[in-house]
Every structure is written in structure tokens, then in C-alpha cells.
Image (cartoon, rainbow, N blue to C red):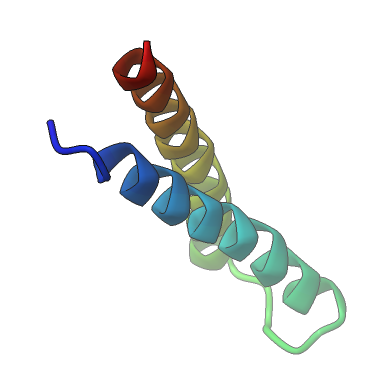
Length: 65
């Protein structure tokens, strides 16, 4: 495992979390029309972002010990 791989996981996780917040906000203010697929993608991005971020944080702390 490379030294900056956990950082990449944390950055990608953060981007996915932001997408998971911005897309529902755009649906609420009716910029995007709400659909089942878009809702599913939004929740999936949020969950995947949380998981990748946590994996990145745990890997970072394990490398720095």
C-alpha cells in the first residue's frame, strides 16, 4: 500500500459525500427532477463516500502508528 493511497480514499470519499448532499438539494429546489434512479445514485454515493472515507482514515492511522 502506498503512502498517499489513504489520502486518495479520503478525497474520493469526501467528493462522493458532497455529491450525496448536493444532488438531493438540487432535487429539492427543483433544478433536477426527482427520479428513482437519481435518488438511488444519490444515496449510493453518500454511503460509498462514507465507506471510502472511513477506509482512508483507518488506513492512514494504521500507517502512521
